[in-house]
Length: 259
Ligand code: IPD
Ligand code: CA
Ligand code: CA
Image 1 (spheres, rainbow, N blue to C red):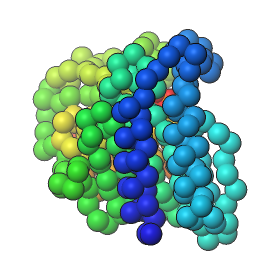
Image 2: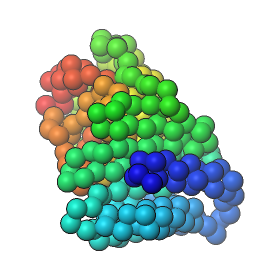
Image 3: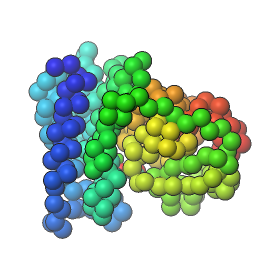
Image 4: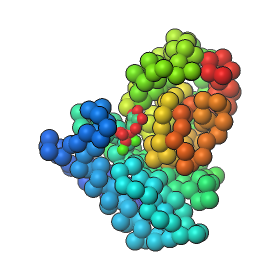
């Protein structure tokens, strides 16, 4: 099976298992603090994806959130796996969480898949092949005036209260746009921009497994992404992320509020 079809099959299988899951207290652990959780389901979902991907593509490398990276062959692709993006939502809401699978070769995007598990919405993007939600093409919004824009940020506290050089500008941006919303999942918020349901996204801190699938979907839907210096960032980097529905919106925000 081709890698994209394989990923699609696996993400749907994993999603079906998560929808049936029942969380008991003994299956939830703190990683670094009470605001940073992992569950038995995060671990089992990542183990399932790793096992199946490496069985089918033994020369590939895996970078996932819950386990150390798996070694790579010389010509292999690199898979970025977030078994549950939005673990806190999974624990407290059993909703608003995603499985995220991004695939790159030599640093170049191949495809990304993000499954909104409970809504059963599968976002996909293949490099040069467009972006889709459940097979229907999606496109970024056409909004350009800042007072019309909806800004997503996955961690409100950190974005607007952390001691950071961009803080004052981000607060001004929040006051200028129509509203700020938070879903609590980097992958779902970037897909919302891709699908035209939001216009801007910002986070001060994101890992490759959080954004690498969704950024391909966003780019294929016509959106743009960069770090807070306005620069592209490598798929292997932890980074602050700014994303927008167009290069023009991105430039306006960078010039007026960040740089
Ligand atoms: C987190 C979520 C959250 C964001 C964090 C991520 P996780 O991922 O996307 O919204 O604010 O930066 O780490 O831990 O639920 O996979
Ligand atoms: Ca995540
Ligand atoms: Ca996760």
